[in-house]
Every structure is written in structure tokens, then in C-alpha cells.
Image (cartoon, rainbow, N blue to C red; front, side):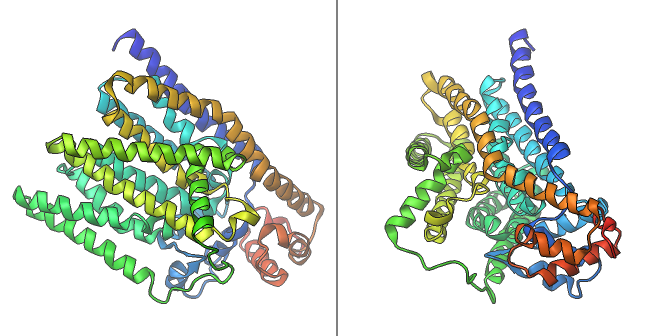
Length: 445
């Protein structure tokens, strides 16, 4: 390794490590083991008070059925003895592993390191993702996002998934993602199509076992998608869609969130920039399909299908949230879902961009996210972090002064879970108290 490559890798991995350490510092300094919002849904199974675990795993939460993330959360909580910060650690580590995998993939594709690879931790681990990083329930966002991006990384390494670890990993992803809520379900078309295509490639090469398993995994993904909508109920709190124009505006706003939470403040600027970037990526990938052959063409076709799935996600988000965004703005947690667009744009430009300007524009892309890093972090703190810190500090102070579960629930129900009543919240707090889970073990009887 040359001295220049060594300096580049030190810089890239140093930035990545810095983002991870900053996130862990925030967990240690700002967060508490107290559940928040949907976290309270985990209390009954955690404390042994859930009578039908299978029904609980499958039940809807808004538009989502989240059996796999719920299992992860419940397992982590049992390991940590009910400390709800464990999910925050999981979220940070998951996005850190995704960033590492993306850096290694980028380096493998170009056969050398680049300062531009610092893009990935800047994209996934900036504190604009405060709501996703420091809330256990957001495993339901973080995990399927990481798995979806991971499937694309597998294809970038090996388009037809010939090696055992690659096709096994892809098969598992195809089965798991439909069990991870609408965020995972939206990628089922891409996964099913590519399982079917790779299964045919394996079959032609006399790899019958892997071919059948790939076909089977794609079929299971489709079946799970159909089961997802069995007895599905549209959430009552979502108002009717207001029409095409508001839906398009919301789609553009969502795409702009790929630049981070700061995009909420100037949504049209970031949104139109993201639309232009998306169109450019379609052009690059489409041209590659027409010009390339063999595995390179297969890789480009996979990227095109994945882009189609992402476009479907953006349109679905625009249609489903168009009536809400004018009054409550685009939720900052959606920035993680939208981050998949610049993630794909980076690899598309690296593979198919104009050769003379390829590296320069990737560096410019990374510098943009480096510049936005503090702005996104500040937006994340102001938009969600400060509200969380103030609310949790008030609860901890009341617990220390000695209150009952009923008193604590009456005072903080609106902050902790506003759609429950005080009696429900008090009962959940008492269940945690009876199980000696901190800090509720300090409540007065």
C-alpha cells in the first residue's frame, strides 16, 4: 500500500469512526432507558403479560406489520434486562456496518481507496437521523433500510450471486424484508425478480440446489407480501389523499430528504436537486444497459430494477403522506429511507459516470454531505433531540423525587405515548416496576 493510499484510508476510516463515537457519546450523555411512544408496545411481552405472542408479532402498527424487527427488539430487551437504550446501540451499529460494507464495496469496484468513500458514514450516521438512531422502535426503519442496501451491495460485488455466501444472504433477505413492515415490503418486487433471474442463471449452470432455493425465496417473498395484506386495515388517522399536485410535491419533498433533515427547511431546493439527480442516474444506468455486456450489463439491470423500486417508494410516500405534510411537515425519520437514493446515485456515478469527471464529482458529492453534516445534526437536535432530552429529564426527576406509576403516567402521558390513556400507561409502568426494570423499580408503591 502506498503512503497516499494509507493517508486516504486513515482519513476515511477516521471520519467513519468519528461519526460512530459521536453517536455513542450521545447515547451515553443524552438518552435514558425509558421507553418512548411505540416502545411501550414492547412492555407486555417483555414483562410476560402478553397472552398471544404470535398475534402480537403480526399485528399492525399504523401501516406496518413488523414481526422480524419486533423479535429483534424483544430479544435485545431481554438481553439488556429491559434497558431501552439497547435498541439505540443496535441502530448505530447496524448503520455503521452498512457504511463499512459500502466503503469496502466502493473500494473493490474501483480497485483503490478514495476520500469520496467518507460519503457513507456522513450519509447514514449524521445526527440528523437523531430520531432513528436514538429510539429503539426505529429498528423497524433502520434494519430494513440496511438490509435493502445490503442486497444491492451483494449484487454490486457479484451480479448473479454465484458464490454460496452471496446467494444465501440474498435468499435470507428476500424472506426477511417482507416481514419488516412497509419499508421492507416495498423492495419485494426487486428481490423477487432478481431471485427469479439468478435462479435461472444457476439452473443453466447446473447449480440446481441454489437455483431452486433462489426461486423458492422469491416465491416466499411474494406469498408473504400477499399475507401482509390479509385483514389489513388502513389507519383511521390518515386523511384522504388531496390529489395529484400535493402528492407530487410531497414526493419531491421526500426525495429531498435524502440530503438529510436540513431539507425540511428548504424542501423545494433539495427536492428538485434530488429529482435532477434521480433523472441523471436513470440516464447513466440506462446507457450502461445499452452499451455494456456480460456481468456489467447484469449489474446495470439490477440497478435499474432497484431504482424502479425506489421510485415506487417515493411515489407511495408522496401519495400516502400528502394530506399530512402541510400541517406536520415531513417527519425527520424519513430521511433515512430517502438516503437510499444518494446511496445508489454514488455507486451509479462511480460505475457509469463520465470517466474524465467521475472521481471529481464523487468528491464534490462527499464534500456536500460533509458540509451538511453539522447542519443536519443541528436540525436533528432542534427538531427531535431537544424535545426528547427535556421530556426524559423531567420524567427522571419525578422518579427520583418519589412518585407512583399513576402519578407519573398522569403527568407525562402526552409526552410518552399520547394515544394511550393514563390508565394504560400506568399499568405498563407498574408491570415494569414489578419486573424490577430500571428506573421504574424506584417508583413508589
